[in-house]
Image (cartoon, helix red, strand yellow):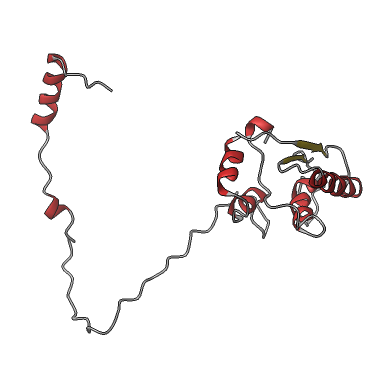
Length: 181
């Protein structure tokens, strides 16, 4: 790339900026303002490293769930597949080789359909499949116990991690926006 020379207007503007600024003294910038009393450390003792716990995940104000939201659970799960392929999948560069749509199904209908689909996809050598669960309907009747909406959305990752599918499925992640996620 060819460097461009500054014209007279740019140089005049730069001179105005540099005239109004003062140089930072890095030695005084990074010294503590409070004087600390130095205590001699014994030569045989190593300072202990302190581990800071990660901040607690933020939850919506009206949330009563004990478990973190599904999106947080899936994002915090460790990567169990090839990291290069996982990166391509997260960026939407890989296309799903198969898809199943569970919209409108009950738990009793969806579980056998999903199990059959995953087993058949594995037999055919498909490596990336898309499972569409939908968002779920709000069916809170105002009772004392909160009702979680999106029953399939929360149940499908558990089905995919349990036998007989747990040994076949390496990774469960939300779909890329180009795939409808």
